[in-house]
Length: 266
Image (cartoon, one colour):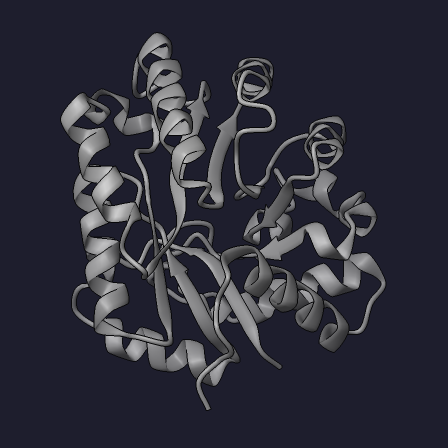
């Protein structure tokens, strides 16, 4: 079984002490390629550094998350433009809107999102997007760029069936995380993941966040890491009524095509 983790925050400080061991466990669990999320100016630089240090295993995204929207200055956009020109950077983002936490003012979030979409319209890189409790504004902003952007994935999807199919109607992709495994918040996802076309579905851990609550035994440190992608694909396959090997092969093929990743190292 080969898996691609399309979103892992490996630049997070919780991985500083044992990243090599984390990557080794991931590979042993079948995770042959990973995309490291760059979600701030410093985080995008770090994601690229990690990708350069682990060629053939890690790639990177470069963007400014809505939590860091105030970083999206002219200088910040210039930095992103340079980062996104690097061959190891395979997507623009993480960017989008987050009205759930509102760590940045909403006008600043919208402005940062629009500026990053303007850059993405130039580069045509795949887009790695975030949306939480902001569906209406998210769709309106994306509508303004219709026909100008490359492939799109709404990562760490946690929304409703209607939102999911709004995205699919635009030919966008959906990223599923261990949120699926949360009986408190993710039960609704189990009811419609079977309806997502295989060529629009990808999987991710969002490590170190969102440790699947169905992992047994639950690790005491509660840190999620890429090796648990194998657990997520098992849960996803069950909900889709598929063999695990089928779900793994389909999501891996979709991710490799979306990001333009070469074959896994042997």
